[in-house]
Length: 73
Image (cartoon, rainbow, N blue to C red; front, side, top):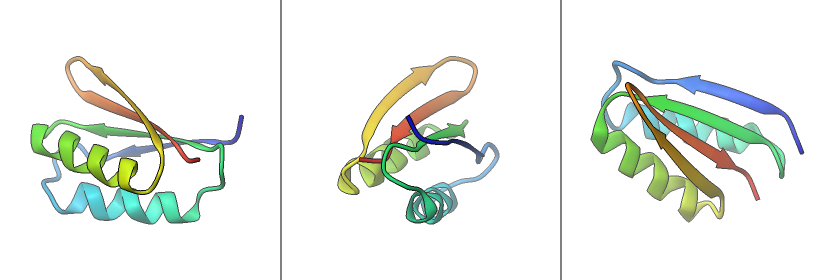
């Protein structure tokens, strides 16, 4: 397993979470994990769509805040 990165974009609305997620994914290596934390529900769907489009695996944990666990493939 690769490195783990955390990106907290709470308080941000689209397109900022997507832009920041894309920038992080571009820097990451295959096998790295990116945990994106959002609090704006449309960001969850937009970040998930981006990650899947990039060929990544995505898991979502919902609670007080939403965590998208993205593994770069």
